[in-house]
Amino acid sequence: PPPSLVMVVMPSPLLLLLIASCAALEPASGLPWSQEHATAASLAGPPGGTRSVVSRDYSLITPDSRVYTGAPGWSKASVAHIVSPAFPTGAAFAMFIAEVPAGGTCAPAPAGHSRFVLSLRGEATWKTASGEYPGADVNTKKDVYAFFPAHAPYTCEAKTHTTLLVYEKRYDGDKAGDDMPQVLSGEVETSPLLDVGVEVFKLRKLLPQTLAYDFNVHVMDFYPGEYLKVREIHHNQHGLLLLTGEGIYRLGNDFHPVSAGDCIYMAPYVPQWYGALGTNTSRYILYKDANREPAIYAGAHTSGKAGGCGVGCSAGGGGGGSCSATATD
Image (cartoon, rainbow, N blue to C red; front, side, top):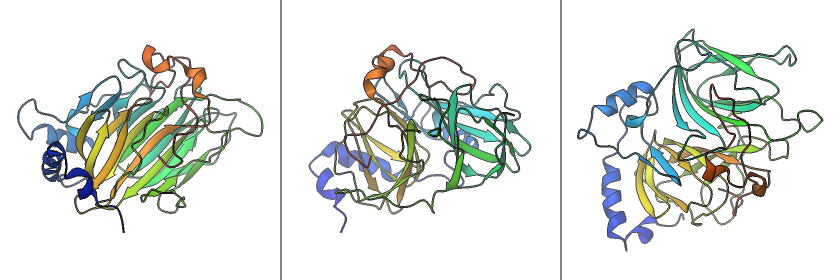
């Protein structure tokens, strides 16, 4: 049987209070990460009140705090930037949510940047934006993901109103040879489940675990009452979107109630832990830099000059790390 979360939280009055708060975080109807939900959420609760927190070591950004704006080269679309190299995080990657109405288009990733997208709703067609890479079209719909390497930029056109989760990172690696990353797409549910050792959650890794790829994207499922056994501290950065469910997330020395639609950035070495509450399965997707030595990026986080960059950005540099302290986070 899964370990009991109650055994963990009972000794702490603070956690009991957070659990009670979390019970009130029932997501509104519709998509909790969408722009329209964010607008509705901003009108609820006390004036000026929010669960969002931003610090050097982590950020929790809830739907009511997201600000949508236009993006260079995108038509009819608006994006909410969640993670970027901007101070105070200095992340080595970018994470944003894009709303693309039917007929709207998206620009390719900035030059030299890889892009991963997960469709949260809607249908879109992706076409190669480079005559040097005559790749096949890629179609995305809900729960379908796609990866476009830096040497193979793609643009998209939305067939229906499409909501996208997007990760972008300046590629650190050779631009030629047999080990170049490839254009990939697939469905989350058909991706294989991987062994998690002593942990109890379900894990999928959506990108190949080879040196050609300098980051990966994980999808993790927790039944209510399940939690991470390892209180993780590692050099890898994360950008997380909670897709379903609710629970408690430890970030540093703070414990936060979280629910579907919340986004979290975790800097290198910040203590982190999750426990699932409620009655629904918790599922989150997260970015994790991988397959690169962390020493070559020394100072990227503290200087705020990491080369992750996002939509419309073209700064140099690079980000990432290699493997985690555990094999499953």
